[in-house]
Length: 95
Image (cartoon, rainbow, N blue to C red; front, top):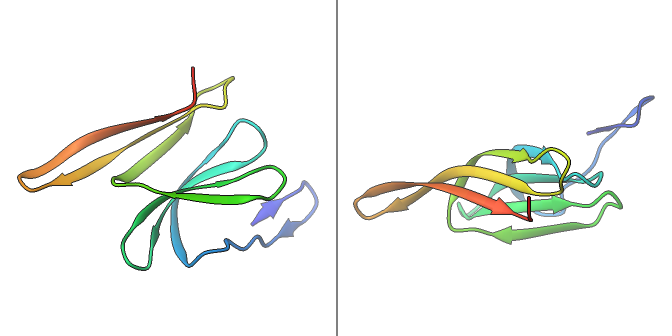
C-alpha cells in the first residue's frame, strides 16, 4: 500500500514472492527482502517512478537499513553452511 497524504493506493508486486523486510532507498523508492515460492531469497527494488527489479541472493536477510543521508543500504542475515550457519552483513552502495 502507498499513502500519498490523502489516500491509500494498492501497489502490486509483479512476481509471486513473499515480502518480508522493507527499507527506503533514499531516492523515493524502496527495497525489500522476499522469498520466492521455491524458497529462493531475493532483494527487490522499486524505484520512485514505479520500476521493479529483483535480484536472487544466496543468503537470507533479516533486517534492512538505509544509511542516513545516502542511498546506501545495509542488511543483516545468515548463510546456511554444511556445518551450521554464518552471520552475513550485506552492503549496497557507498557511504
